[in-house]
Length: 249
Length: 249
DNA sequence: CGTAGAATTGAGTGACCTCAATCTAAGTGG
DNA sequence: CCACTTAGATTGAGGTCACTCAATTCTACG
Image (cartoon, rainbow over all chains, first blue to last red; front, side, top):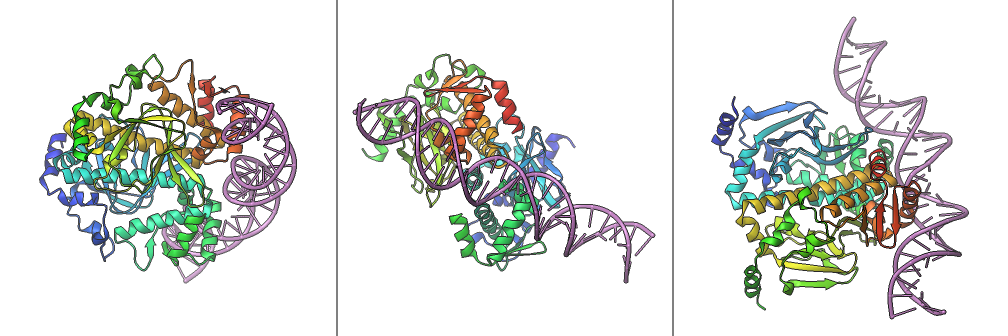
């Protein structure tokens, strides 16, 4: 399929629902059914695909012409160091758009950081030009996108503060609270519990600590009666307690 | 002065040169004279003001209607914790625009993080509406702004990686290299040396370490013959050596 | 000079790391 | 249905990087 033809096909279906993802998702956007927010996106299945855990979705250094929506599973933005160390810059959960920063750079600037699947994922790709025309077409869409960019920056700043200033327990609590909020917006939290495919190893790389220490930190949070973990589910027992730890440490 | 009147006055002078600040500043933008890039901005002096070191330029929680250009001195974006700890999220150097993320949020969302003067500063303020109309008026300006936002995010991600993964020496080297590059773009580097008003205390808060340890880390970099510090000047002796430390540690 | 802010240095401590072993759960093939 | 495998979680012991506290020296500036 030639590039123009693909462009045309994607423009054909109603693109508006996709852009609902831009919405920050206020209280009224909360869904009662798990993943319903994602499921109701009438996206053409043709441009959707799956990838297994650990697959590289966006390679650092590639020039990009696509943005993605994550429909199932988790993904992560990763900075790799030459000696194998890595920093997870952020997690993407179902319903998130990713690599959308591409839209911010005019030319064909290469991606600075990779995006990799954390679990098995189902993603949906859109030509950058489609997205760009959507954004440029309407001030409201533009505003949503701007707010999206602003959010990314705010999350990065908060995580930076966590890693730089907080103890292991404080960082962990902050991360759980962030995920709790984001997943709540997406309707992916039930009874203060949510599915979390991230391994202790991932938490370690996201919070700037070792897997071993993540384990001990989690234990202390469990012993304090703040959280529980069962299988792949994380349960927040005491939201207030977790907030206290997050603030103080 | 009423708000509309102020708006009108600011729209009167040629706003284009101000927006040159949006330019990333490629190799051809390099100036030979110190601060000439900043000095040649024909900005109305009427909306310029000065502040002394440590003054709060943007308070966290305030709703904002202004963006700023930094003409002299350094400023910093700061996240404050309840118990007095703080994380410096980034430094602003002469020629930088700041609090411009305001433009990203449509409503009157309050600023998430404060901006404070690091040294005595001279700043220049613009009503947000002026900036907004400039950006919306031209695709090129819009693209410059987008690239600006993208840069902010990239810097934040890099710093996060530094704090999370690198040793004290690696972080310090990375920071010096970033400042070196940015100040070079602004023509504020001469003989691989630049003026740096940031105290060890500031470096500590930016890199997630204590002032005492910053001191010892600086000493080790000096002893290794990588940098020198004299008065308020920081001199990069071995750019390659510093890069090696930055990459490996 | 005298004073205050900043930098420097020493000594002791603790949070977090490293290395390495063990345990658990969930496949997988016979 | 059960050995076998493997990824992940857990625990222990010991080391170290960076922190805390506190004293001293330097530097700028009135």
